Length: 295
Image 1 (cartoon, rainbow, N blue to C red):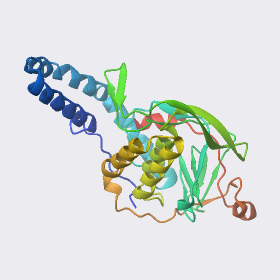
Image 2 (cartoon, rainbow, N blue to C red; image 1 turned 30 degrees about the vertical axis):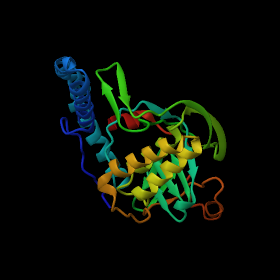
Image 3 (cartoon, rainbow, N blue to C red; image 1 turned 180 degrees about the horizontal axis):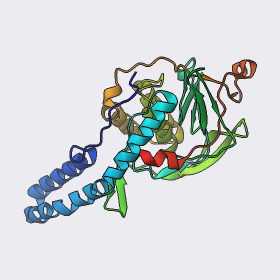
């Protein structure tokens, strides 16, 4: 269990630069085969393209690193662990506690600032928490609304400061989602891109793969199932599954974490065990300001 996972934010050895390089090589190869006169203009255009990718990461980098270090330290002091580093860009958000139920996670228990896993129920954005590490307990305040941000399907590449390119989340559609409101689990219709629901749950699980009782394989398979449930064509969903299996969180492939040590005091709606023992989590809303320092 990695209580303090390493911070990976290289400037040059970055996925964005690799993608830009691969795209450039492909364009130059096509020009060499079909339009040799275009090779020189393509090579001359490489500099502004690389600058477009690098400058948004260079400018403000020192402050971002300071903020992420402070946020990780606060998490260590409050929870005894911090999540894996995620660099964004954060372009999507929810301002309510989203719930996903899945039998795969029956018997799993984990509580953190942004993710709760409780006996088959995943809650993202559970709200402000009060942790007593000495007593081994945590409680959540459902009355305080917060915001959780994520980038959709990764990677997303900022280009200068006026565009973001990357893996598409596809067309908007209506999709039913489960959420918590006033201590009750309810359903609402979200009008959002096809892959948003799946990418949100997948990103939150990936964020805590270093400490949560969830494996990379389980998170990837849930992502694939949710894409199909949302109506994504099977071939496209398979491509996305292939990408996360072989490209995402490769250092977490062999990690198997036990259940978390904390006991939740806040009753979780619909959980008879929590109602009987008063040891389960309550849910509320999440916060963008706390997530932004992680950029």
